[in-house]
Length: 197
View 1 (cartoon, one colour):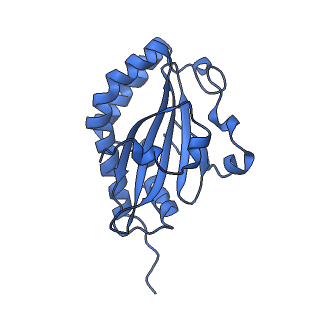
View 2 (view 1 turned 90 degrees about the vertical axis):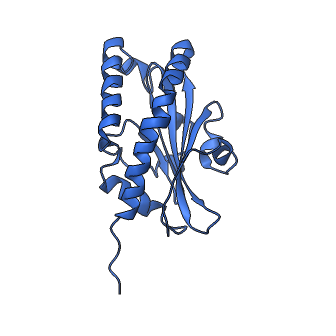
View 3 (view 1 turned 135 degrees about the horizontal axis):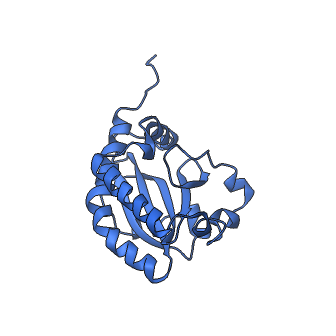
């Protein structure tokens, strides 16, 4: 479910200190009924065991295939357009005590992990169109459960980046995020539970 940007910007996440020049583009929630305050790692593990980014709906796979094909034709994803070449990685702004918490990049994910704490994690990517951060946070809901929140932070690369982000907005909201919602909420429901004693 789409949420107001203030649901991300109004919370004391660590990422705010290191990405003040990024714009919060989208904030999305994922229901995790029965989740408690310490279940963020459980949710992340469930997402990974379910295939993570490598396992998407046919419509989402088609959109990404088109995007990668365009990127190859237009040179959007060449190494010179990425982290450490076109843009300085956000990771370089962070202390080692934070970046040392970053796990290895999951298979199929375009993001380079920045950090992973007990209630939030972040990863970044860059190409010719945008420098982006995906932030995941663990938030207590009014019912007392906790749920996963995803925020997408961006710095478009000039006119091309702004046009690109505007063009893909309808696809993010009608195909990509709803598909992620189904996958990640299903991953929570089907997660491996410890045996009852």
